[in-house]
Length: 195
Picture (spheres, one colour):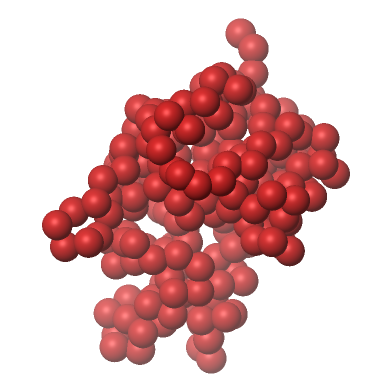
């Protein structure tokens, strides 16, 4: 049986980002994890993810708006993945069964549903300051077909949880310090779960 084909969607930015995508590629090659990253999709043409893809010799496609099911299916047809890994993809995802789309989220769910980036860690530290929890979290979960509810929230972070790894909050922590440790844990667990 061949390697599992993984297509990564990673937004990054115009000048950076994509460290999770790069880590997946490097770890899959070095540790022979049973999958290969067959391509990456980014919404920043020639941005940070794009540059990493060139350096890693991974096929890359730019996905501009609109975020329609038709456009997603076209990109899925391009690489025919067995699994889609969202790694910092900040757009709605449509057109693929939930059991074939996984996301990595840098916080505890459901507390941080709908949040991304720095907002996640700030929310965790606010809850910690009220004594509601003593840890951050890395969560990997399946992603259901995108839907927006009547209250304006969406279901992006509501799929079945695959794994959660707590990241203890330490004395003197700031959200910035917690973010660094959470990112380290993300890079450690994402390749193994993806494989």
